[in-house]
Amino acid sequence: MSETDQYHRLIADYQTGQISDEDFAKLEAALRDSEDVRNLFHRACRVDSRLRRIAENLTVDQEAETQREESKVVSIASGDGFRKQPFFKPVAAAAAVVLLSALTWTIAAQKRVVANLVSSEDAVWERGAPTESGLSLTRGSLRLSSGIATIRFVSGVEMTLEAPVRLYLKGPVRATLVSGTVVVKSDREDDFVLETEFGQAVAHEGEFAAFGGTGESGTDFEAISGKVIISHDFSREVTQLTGGATATMSADRLDSSEERRIEPPFERFDKRARIRTDGRAATFIRNNRVRKWTRPEFLTLKTSTHGNGFDQRSVIGFDLTAVESAEIEAVSLRLNVVHSGRGLISRLPKMNRFAVYGVVNPAKEDWLVGDLWEEAPAPDDGVFLARFEIPRSQTSGEIDLTSEAISDFVRKKAGHSVSFVIVRETANRDGDGPGYTHAIASDSHPEVSGPMLEMVLKQ
Amino acid sequence: MPNEQPTEETFLRVFLRSEDDLRAYARALLPTWEVVDEVMQEASLVMWRKLDQLRDESEFLPWAKVIVRFESLKARRTFARDRHQFGDDVFELLAAEDESNDEEVWQRERLAMTSCLGKFEPAQRDLVLLPYRGHGAVVELATDSGKTVNSLYKKIGRLREKLTVCIEHEMARSGANRELL
Image (tube, rainbow over all chains, first blue to last red; front, side, top):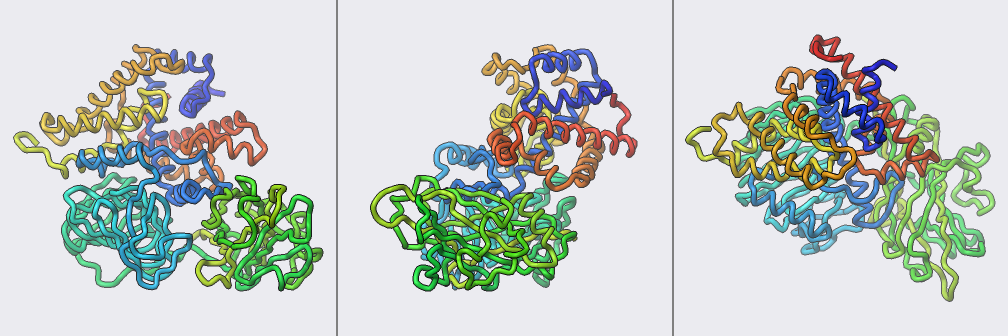
């Protein structure tokens, strides 16, 4: 190892908090003695800072975190709970009042109401979210799958969501647009910050639209009235848009124009493929009395202490014949947990653990919806892919499973079909009365989406 | 900016332009990101209050660095017992010698980093970014993958080294790395 490599290692250990006392002394001595090492250290700090910014901007991960914090549904792709609010995104801090209120909000009230649903037109939400006007929204993710909805932040800022939209409410003056189209209207003198993957927009007594996507498609902004300030993370360019002007932000550039957009942008989801089960989903019950004990809108899960006839597992399948392995970058398995209304929740342990297996047994890959318990794919027929937990206090919410294991498994099955077995690993507690049966929405569910495999595709 | 009442927009523009560099500067002076966040919050408020002292917008970065340095010094008193805090002499050397006031170098670094991260596999990129989600995230991944936390940190450290070396090479190739080891 060269001397330079050694300093690289010492700096990396220092920055990740893993440096030993002995190595720290070495690093400190080198910094004291060598200007070159100090320059190397400064550069490493700039890299560290940029990496942290990238990590902060991974809003999809952030959504998963929030989902866990909000709905207490824990996915395997989790961190250690709620991420501390990073150093304030300074756009908001331009007005010191906003800065102070934002900080106060962060410390005092993660659960405080940040917005209310004002109106909705045929709005369908993908999680247990607002369905009636006037309902309160706390910090967390919102997914509007169809329709139009308007929310009003407690700061007075109004935002109209045009489905499909994935949004993350961060506070009274801040939200993150993950994807979709929103219109922000602010009559306030203070700023409202809309974060996107590659930068942010600050509304200031005006109205603007954001057409957002993730990945290379980036985000477009259009000032409708008043002014909006756009800042770009990578180039650190800042531009101000006034009525009618537009800006396009991608990973590495920000372009603005005084011309009003003539045509709306093309759909921003062309790099994602979403596949549903199309009916290839079933629950199998140990006593095989499927028609009596299961319902088509539910994929149910239950495990008893003693393995009685009411144990249930579900199997879902996706057709991947139109997908090529090489084009898959990452895969998420999305499940909507819904209230089954069956059994006593109090008989559940406080935390319920679930597992997902990918079916690899060739003899079981051609399973049928009407198969018997003994014939249907079971965990032994697959490989373990993911685990998630649901507190018993939560009977609805969204599960978003993202892991390299799932991505690898799906890549291997690309061009064919793929099946997943879902089981509840934890049993009901001993006691009187029937234990609760967990349910995942199937494609037949009238209100929320059935299982979905979402793939991020390479160009 | 002289003789002009500082406006929100002025502050916004100059601060945004320099934010990343100020954070990196503070990171060089302070042992953890938590402390950096606290110092930057304090420093930004001071900047906002004292913006009218700034004579010219082009002087913002060095002026702001002085404020960050001062706030960092104050913060050092509160965590003086941190065993991995550099001594006063090294602190002063680092505070005085940040040679990162060259916009062209920053731009080259950003491009080099983007290029180098692009060479990583998605799983490697995720791993490099993992520590920013907290120590718990590393512990959880270690548990899930059957590795020890220590070995996972070692792997992350190796990837960071790999990234830094790659950036050095990219910088050297682009002719901007004349002063490195």
